[in-house]
Image (cartoon, rainbow, N blue to C red; front, top):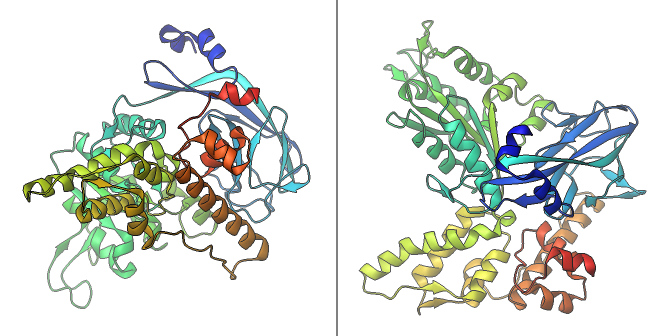
Length: 476
């Protein structure tokens, strides 16, 4: 804290965040989080504590969780507490036995000082703390070819900018289409290995029985059809970086061999007894929950520790709608150059179209957005793209798809997922209709502004236009 006092007025910051949990400094180079604490006050793990000093903390039985509970009724990764601008958000992560507060099962709830909730056989109490935690942010809105001006992305950029200069293994987690390979490539290009090879292996695209040969190579005669010596990807990447995408697809029997390379810097070709030294930095990525796989004995705990020396979680696009305008501009500019070369007029997205793009949930994330933008610009007939044009591109028609019921799920889970679909679709259409104006939308929906804002934030739906300040909402 003494070091932070030299650069920042802590008293001023504490006054600024007296009613809030997140504050961005005027220099835009730091985020400040108000720390909190979870205490197990009753149950199997009574006395255990967790200081919440980062934006996302996990609760569960897995060793990778921030608060580990040794209770058999607790799921591997049971719940999370996230520090949001509105407060501390407790969210159930599709656990088996759920979270209970005041006798009711809670999927998502903001915690207040003294809030108590049940996780398995444990009763936990939440207490906010007075001290602030500084989280550095990158001064740039890009890292290599990965773009993002949001606080969440600039926090990731800051971590990877520092990690790139080292030889530490990095694990990048996130949904499909969030840009994990772009981040891995940027790590290589910002490192001292940038003039050497950057090799990619997508474990999901290679048959499981061939991955070992891809990674380590083979000697002549090692198996039927091995008519010549073949070097593996580790040898090809010597001196550079090997990016292992979808590392969660690796067979359990192959994982000890990967661990040996990471620890000893040696590979052994199939059919050989001679180890070969290699100097390779490994960056891995996955959309899977590897800690849950560890508990299911599908992934080795020691390998996960070795891969995740530095770990970042890339947020889905729906959680950072403020990044969509810069991404749309980037994707459309490439196509507009082609149109210009063909003697066609350049096109741009009108205001309603941009609101629609920021409200869409984007299950395919940045990859889906890029495809939608490029298709819309290529097929545009005029010089402006409207909301109705995008509706046709994304849904094939101008109305929303019907809600789908999954009868393979238990009744309660199917009902909860259907309710989530309804809320998301209703809010998307509402904010599109009101052109992102929160005041107008709250009147149409007959909901309090503060409640509507929280619902929109939950689903990553933009609701900035026409909004009062947080203090005004509190007055209401």
